[in-house]
Length: 210
Image: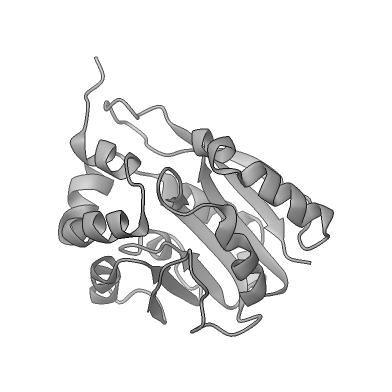
């Protein structure tokens, strides 16, 4: 029988940015051990592998969207990467590891006034586009801070894709020729786990800004 897990249930039950600040602020110091390691959380490494395969060497300035404690940065050694997250406490853990050139505390549902137009040539995200976290409303702002040709490799929880409206938002960006047609991959979120979400998978949207 698969085990239930209160921490996963709490993460999947988030509704507002304020909920995320509270949950991840209190979770930060133990997140890598009590969540990532204990639950077989491989999604950051899986998406980082896709990012590398799709040409990360050509993308000198990369933004990790929802960087947390830096699990993506750990899987992308040698890449110039900044991290943005709503939780200052999570980013402080990443800072203690020596990760990220720049760490930005910000709410992705609001304008990113601290970032200039066309600042980044690569974007990667894991664990952010899911239930109660960040939806597609942030995509136009990401387009603003993306350089022409910027690579996007965005993990999106599969069962949140339709509920949050990612499909129509992506379709509009393609129709308006703001991004290239999207190549979707599927990736495991956990490996070797026994909890009730062990078999969950996520879509990974791969595309370029035009």
